[in-house]
Length: 183
Image (cartoon, rainbow, N blue to C red; front, side, top):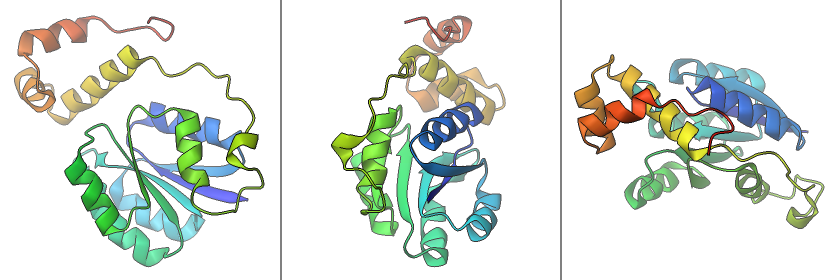
C-alpha cells in the first residue's frame, strides 16, 4: 500500500485530501506544522508526501532537503497558494518531484502522485471516475484570506498588502463567508 504524509496547516484541506486519497488506495497521515513533520515522516515512513509551501510561520521549502535526506526515495509534491515560476524552480532544485498550485482537484493530485512510479496497480486512465463535488473557489479564497489574516494577528491592512488587494475589498470579502454549495 502507498503511504501518504500530508503536511498542511489548513486542517480542513488536509482532512479533505486525506479522505479523498484514502478512497484511491493511500494510507494517509496528516501533520499541521513543520516541527512535527520530520518526526512523523521518520515514524510513518511514507512513500509519498504532499507538502504545503506555507506552514503557519514557516516555509515548506525549508523542509524539502531534510525530508529528502531522511527519505531519499519518497515522492514529494509541493502545494502552494502562491504559485510562481521562481518558487517552482526552487522547489524542484531543492528536491521536490512535483509542484502544484492550489486549489488542486483530486484527479490532478492523483495524476501527480501516479507519475511517481509504477507502484499503482492501475494505469492513469483506469482510475475510477471521480464524482465528488470540486471545492468551491470562493470558499477556498475565503479560507485562504482567513489563514493569512490569522497569520497577521487580525491586522487587515497587512493582510490586504500580502494578498495584493485594497483594504476595503478585503473587508467586503471577509463579510461574505461563502457556503459549501454557494457558487
